[in-house]
Length: 150
Image (cartoon, rainbow, N blue to C red; front, side, top):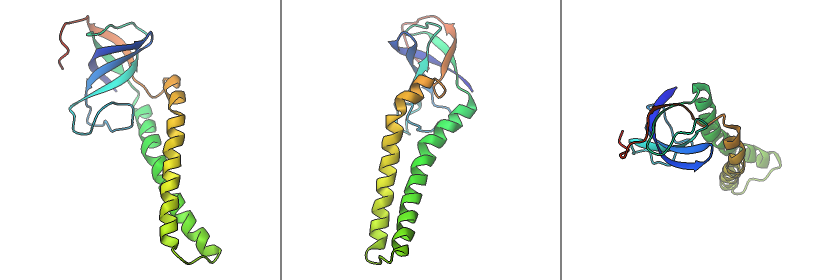
């Protein structure tokens, strides 16, 4: 999936922040600094071609990788919630604990969900370094301009 945007900040020698128009398939996977109501998103991209602030660029991110990132960001915590809740419920029933089983199971589900988010956050650096889940600047469309409007 290719999109066009503007470089708004150079993070380091190979990474830049881009302002892109939110794509209809875009979801809050955590790679963007935005809220769900905003029309534009700010996202980090691999900038090995050396685009500068203000340059209009074309970026590419494989659709498969977008789906993998969405799966990781949404499905893993959901599965942790379900497995923690259901597993604890039936585990407590199996050992004949009947008092407050629902409350304990709900709490366990929330703890499992929190742990899954912490594990994802801990591995965020590894995901970033892999460059598999971030867009890549593939060409400069127009060189630096003084305004950044989409």
